[in-house]
Amino acid sequence: MLYATRPGALPARFRRERVLLVGCGDVGVRVAAQLRGRVRLLALTSSAGRVAELRGLGITPLIGNLDRPGGVARLAGLATRVVHLAPPPESSEGDPRTRTLARALRRRSPPQSLVYGSTSGVYGDCGGEFVTETRATNAHTARAGRRIYAENQVRHLGRATGVTCTVLRIPGIYAPNRVGGTPRERLIKGTPVLRSEDDVFTNHVHADDLARACVAALWRGTPQRVYNANDDSVMKMGDYFDLAADLYGLPRPSRVPRSTAPQHMSLLLLSFMSESRRMDNTRLKKELRFTLRYPTVAQGLVAPHA
Image (cartoon, rainbow, N blue to C red; front, side, top):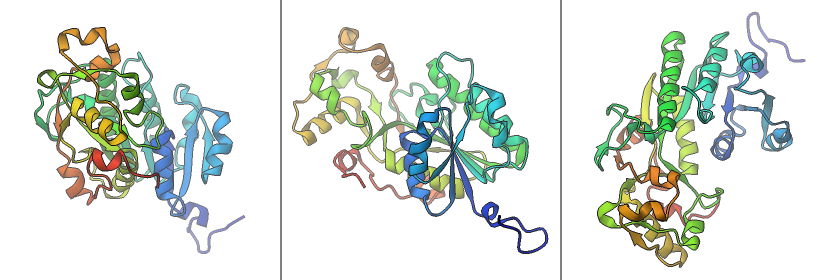
């Protein structure tokens, strides 16, 4: 057992930064890779089957479920910083998971900082305009509405406790070493895209850059600040798939008018094609002093696994 070396000093294991990952999926694991060896890593998981995997990644697993509030009360005071990437439940009113987490963190010794991974969908359809973080949210889907609720819960936590709470608004995440992380499978299936005059602007971020942005925001984020977490690419969705097809040596997808798109595409895909915006990432790069490793999808789609 370790003891304090002077009166009032904390044991060494508590003096080291402790980062809690809530939602330790693909991006959470990448965040852990950025921090391994620099901090003590903790991760909340509701699956006992992931315990060995997380330990193998140098992460201390904590069994708990945000859908059962009583099971996460012990998170209070455990971490000095938190990365919250857990999505809201489907078909819920608001986001009870974020509400439960915020209540647990307020109980005792709140963390110094918390980063929440939201979605660019909170802006709704912007008609292809450039979007900065000062633009009012205007969710067009229930999915995006739940994220706005979660953002508000996170901000309330910051105002009530002094925790530096940062929100990252995240567009489409891609990476060659991410399951479903490139358009390759869709190109092979031959799913069409919208013709240029009906197409929408889309935004992207490489999963590794997103993980690095989470880490930057943990230490450099400004209280209650929002950051667009996207790369520098400015392109329409069809052009993105054309680019991927050329890079992978596959046929370019066919183009269809919006009027016949429902015959060829799923409702989920159509929902993404109903919103058009070009996100401005100036604040991310200037305030967080963040440099993109993959500033364009042309670079990121062919990047080898680091």
